[in-house]
Length: 276
Image (cartoon, rainbow, N blue to C red; front, top):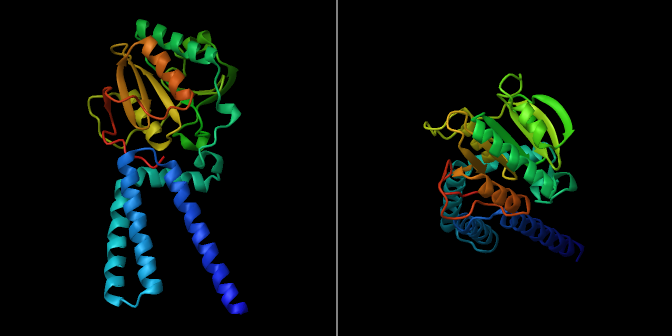
């Protein structure tokens, strides 16, 4: 009887752990087509487990295992960016970010959105290139950048942003990292997008690169050549946008809306299929 109870307990724990992992995956998926792919894959895994466990069908079991393996390789290629991000979060123990929990330090006041919008509008008018990363829950750390830049640790203000991107300052070529109501650092060098978008400059590729790797951060770009305003989110770029549209998007995204509205012009990730 003890053996049977132990076996039953083991099976219950197995089902509970598998269900928890499946729930976490479904909780993180936002895009409908990605959800369909994930459902199909988990169905094949469950079918393979059932055939191996309860049915004496060696040939069917081999075929299902081969199909699961082929699907695993295909999904690894399709979701390589998302899987890399998952491993980074697990490796750095950022479980709160993985679970999608918003922390107080990421919450920005309305005044912060206004300061960013006003500064971006002024920079656009003056055609001064700028790159502003707003962390809304990814808990970005120095090791996430090619160069972490210089620590600022100051209260957000329009005047400080304008000074940081002044042409005669040593930090104007890098990005400014904003978290909550504070400017954390400046002169940050971001990883470039792995997707070749040849018609865009380094700032736009950097904006796409950081938002491809971290889905809970957004990046505002001001073109130095044209003064055009752009906003990157989840590896997609919306451009051109006006100052009022930028303020609207920032307000929506910081309030928890995860994707750019449909029907807008975007590049960098046309399918928008993401696990997170």
